[in-house]
Length: 81
Image (cartoon, rainbow, N blue to C red; front, side, top):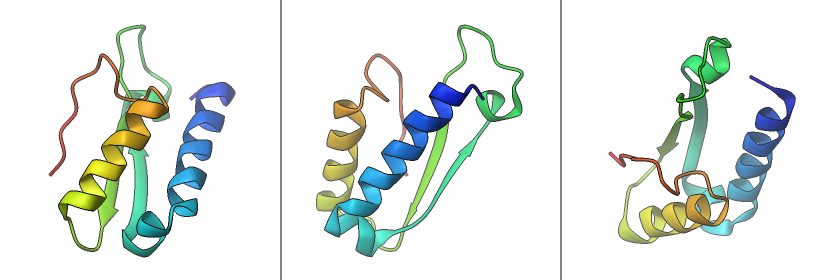
């Protein structure tokens, strides 16, 4: 992973921890896949897994809004489980 990408993801995690609802609910954030391994291409996406204590509409909506604001998921498919 390039330094600029790592900084952007670190900033995203810091922002999530700074939002009270995430601070209480987010248990772990895991970044994985080709970007982390270093074997990515120009078409590669970011694989980010956010583990929360309780999934609810407020947490889900807030997370989506933050990711869109940070341009993490704009133009990319994403899945919330």
